[in-house]
Length: 261
Image (tube, rainbow, N blue to C red; front, side):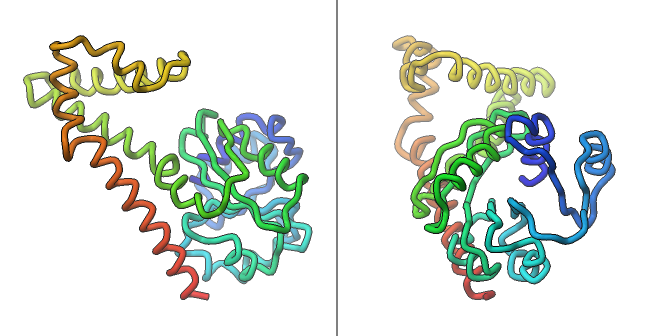
């Protein structure tokens, strides 16, 4: 996720109001080094407090990284975390900072087509709200500030959501192969159908339900398929169960982070 965010910022630093971007990466790959050199980004700069510190690390790594991270934090630093399940109060207590934003972007932010929800700590004011929004804008749509209690749900719906869509492509292609299509044809049909449907959804103001109904002729092939997908135990029920599972896991990560403190 951190790499996707960095790609978004590299694409248009000006849109985020960022004059200079520093990246801390203990083991940078050649692609990161080349991107940093091309965009005049400071890679692994000398340790000093940052104006904004983005925590694009796994929540399980936070406790072990805390002492090193403190070197980049002062009372004026705005800490922006994308760690699932790690609360604003936990980040503030561990790093000794007050201004914290908890954000959840998703991987389409790498091409400026993501969506990010964020929440702010009580010490943040209008300036931090604006700074967080500008930081996230190059990644796509920004929603916030939201109540922190909603962040696990944001993570479950949009943070994890691209994986659900990719699985849908996989499943649709597999179904195509099962009815006689060769692999290349099934993969191409499934992939381009999902890409095209997403573009259509972004182009028109109609709701997803309205668009679905517009392509569903009574008694036709689409209606037959939807009768299966929308039946008890079908896609709506499965999606609710999936999102519920992701929300529960977010709560578990929060409890695990607290225990490591």
